[in-house]
Image (cartoon, rainbow, N blue to C red; front, side, top):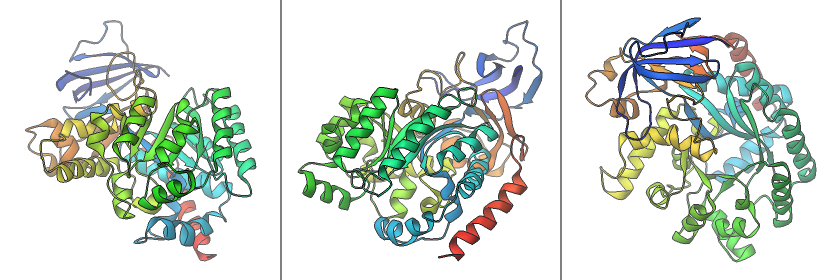
Length: 433
């Protein structure tokens, strides 16, 4: 892959205790080799490519810890509905008509959007995941992929077999950029015996689990009625948290639930836009963090959130924490940025190699142009990035040491074809409804 130099950027490393630094970043192959003041890279470093950051902000790439990428095809199709009618009356009927090619191009549409707005890694749960994996590999993206499993559906056993086949075929592919997890949809769609089968398979193969959890008040009522305990306690009893687990949403939790998540080391994907837009509620972010639970940000699918721009999630997470606590100092700009970088890495079990700009870490980096009216002046760089920046300010994106986007141009993807395929396939899916 060769050597890459990012020169004279203003680096927000997201390393605890480090302040912004004007300097250079040396990248060798897919790893960061050195970070320091201008000219501090090793004397024998001979980059084959240089990115002139020119004082712009350089950050770790953003990490989206919960998505359904191909749902971009249904953006704006079923807005302004509660979760269950949204799913059962609008989304599920269309998804039943999806083909592998639909999912491939829908995922491409999502990756175009994610890359251009600074996301370098995403955790995805959907169908035809071999096609998702193929698009991830083609795009040079980093992803954690799960075949969605509806244990109570007629094809529940077949879906689990597909999830296991995905792991066999794709684990570690894309030069290590693809990680496979198992994806039981939720405790209300997967009976206990099925979840136990998933846990056993995850333990045997060394895989993590990605699951929706405690998303709505109705889910909590149903699980308590059926099993006599909260959704969190129910999953703990079934052993779901005995393997590395990523729990999406976690809106309706009590103190005992939060204690379980902390004790079991469960990572939580906080989806503030989706949860508010679907009327599901507000996750207890501050309580989770106080308990030591790793929390990252997720966009959910664009069918619910309409946009995959994580800068929107960063802002809303901060505003909600301040507003619900009544304390504007309860959650600051740097903490908000941590959710999308350091926190996301911890949620995915990669705190030692993702989410920070430091030697030895994977070279997933973004450059934000600060030459914009809404990013001027620059009194506080963390505030600027968290509260003022948008995905449209992303100038350059580097994944695994490779420049995949710069100056509005994609270097790994055919933008025009993906847009064309996305429009055509979305129209066909909805038109058949």
